[in-house]
Length: 173
Image (cartoon, rainbow, N blue to C red; front, side, top):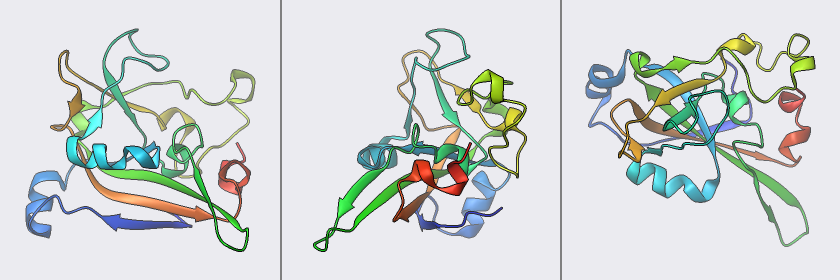
């Protein structure tokens, strides 16, 4: 899969590759876009469940992920932050977590929620996936605020751009 423009920073979650493979090697790779200021909380506590979002049981706790880094990089999810250097040049920074997800915990939804319905059949978000495969929901449990058993965040993906992310070719949809 092409992840051009992204740099990966590994997060140590196991003592070695053998332990990682034994625990999470058969789990799916998924991504979760977020604000950079949430990174520390996610790394220390796990992904926080929400009761907001589209197309799932109203009020039910869940976490959204995707098999597509480009889908998670949409500025709605991976909200960019900017920094201007001493020469006045502005750069945009985006952060997406690379995760392993227990396949038995995923409840795929059949509806992609970012594209207006009238364009759904004419737009391809990520050539590696059908649009109907882009959103995964991992249900949470009542009284539990962070999902740790079914999702492990093991990489931080960062993209630095001289162009505002909504204007990148990968965001053309």
